[in-house]
Image 1 (cartoon, rainbow, N blue to C red):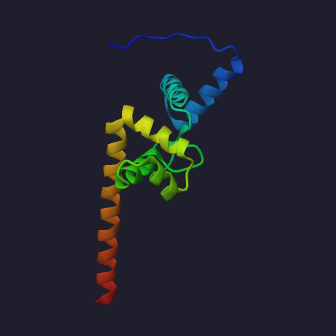
Image 2 (image 1 turned 135 degrees about the vertical axis):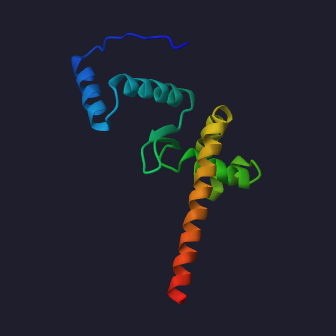
Length: 137
């Protein structure tokens, strides 16, 4: 059962900014505040992890680098070797470790991102093949 949290921002401007941002995103301000709390706690728990928006939705990523699912996809392909993963992606080993730590606690979420990407790549390859067939007549 969900529990509630009531808080008063120290600055009235904080609430104004939250309301403005919620309107822009077309989200209830409580949903946006909840997202900020969840993501803030995750960033505290997994230093080096940030969250970003994009066409595929909001997702975790490593600071200045790829999405967590991309790091983990390489990590799995490299036989669970963080050093090889860091070398392949040209990342600091600590960022790979942050992605692996996040993956350890959010495996289903990250595996779903990996699977969704595979499906999108397969669809794109099939569409490309269909266009090539049309061009060849």
